[in-house]
Image (cartoon, rainbow, N blue to C red; front, side, top):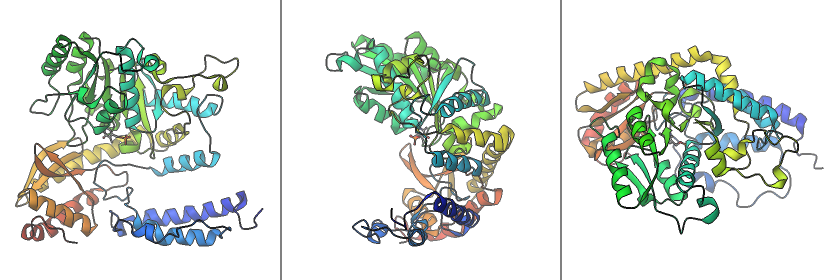
Length: 476
Ligand SMILES: *Cc1c(COP(=O)(O)O)cnc(C)c1O
């Protein structure tokens, strides 16, 4: 064996060194620009084209890491990260992830990681109670909301085809139809494509003035499709759309879907975490009538990426759709065991439940609720302050902790956004709302303080004048 190669004693020493490095990294995050200042290709150009033939000392590998990587990262754990949605990693969940990584388990079957399977079942139960969902829901932990939504849409397909699609293929089958509002995430489009249903068969149901799916329009679309000889398969509703936080009227839409025997999936990837606070649950009233619900504890709650929870009213339709049990995956004498790979697309699975267990115990639901309530209150306060800045306009008011604003016109708003992100004190991203270019603000980073949130105001005051002078041009 090469004497330089790392063994487990060296791993122990270097883990301590890495822990020290990470402590300093987190302690000094506010001194870094939130968004990477790297130009495309810059990092790649600094790497050798060929791998080393002989072992290199860890000292040199680690030094290169420090020199190359952190400076070319966008810092999602920066307390002034207000872009996209958060990808929170509470320290307790990071610790759990280190342990899961160190054991390097592969949790495809109960037998290959009994603790992972049973903790996963227990954590689904804990989270179901934490969110106030009805007792009949069970579920699994997926890698992403995209995978959960794909699984739900595949289940819609098989159910609508009398379970014939998987075996016979789709070429001789009726045309299936899916229904979602134009506020749902692109993962629904992706699921329509990948499921073979086809993106053209994803019906965009009209929304009302509040951006919620209109249940009457849903009813009309289903009836029309049936009259045209098409076969409705399912409805995807959103609780907290990605663009501006749209909330479908779940109860009314579920009633329509039920009347037509359609499968219902609710995408609450971001906003689901807020449902640990009872006062926000009216936003998804009726959700207990859904067949499938996804929410990402890796967004707002604090379980390190990746961690997407899919609740299922009845897992059997999904298992029938995505599950296979070949001879080499049988667990002899234990046919009734839960093998979570049968609930999803990949065979191999990570041990994701450990970080939820650590997270919920280390902070308690009260600790997590307090953060979310602060984020919501601070977002409202920030929106009120921005509304009275000269030239600024709140375009969509806060939904939980997400709102959008604009400055003068599209060109000035875009110029301002570029300046904000080149400045580095905060990080914001854009969307289009009813044709207008708007800047999104979401408050949700696990360690952010009231002052971090109010820093947005300071940055806007500092940079608005310059942006007004140079509309449409980048500062760089
Ligand atoms: C983030 C998000 C998704 C996609 O989540 P992934 O886990 O990254 O696939 C889907 N829907 C909504 C509403 C989201 O906010």
